[in-house]
Image (tube, rainbow, N blue to C red; front, side, top):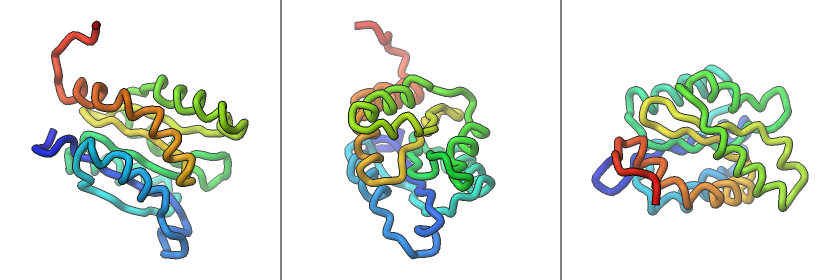
Length: 165
């Protein structure tokens, strides 16, 4: 954990955004929502490319030492939506409850939420979470996780305190 909180990375996956044809509104929304958790140390827009996503996530954890990485985009059903698959290859273990909570809350708003393939998990001491690509979807899903994120990040940083209340 850095002096001003956690070290955070935001990775937006968008073919159009990567070539400057779309403004990254979802990445901006994610940045706003996590500002109180720490410092955004890495931010990037990549095309929906499996190998680039995988390599970037691994590098941000292994070399940059980030505590939290939030991806936005690429969680749907098209052949270009490879974020969950790429993320899964870098995880040491999944945290399925986070993805389940996001889908459950989203289902209260749209039946399309059941189509999300977003995953969440841990690599090293870093939590990685996939969020939807739309600004509204990213915001609504992240808002579900925000109450639990400080505790999760503290535990990953080595907090030995008992979780029971």
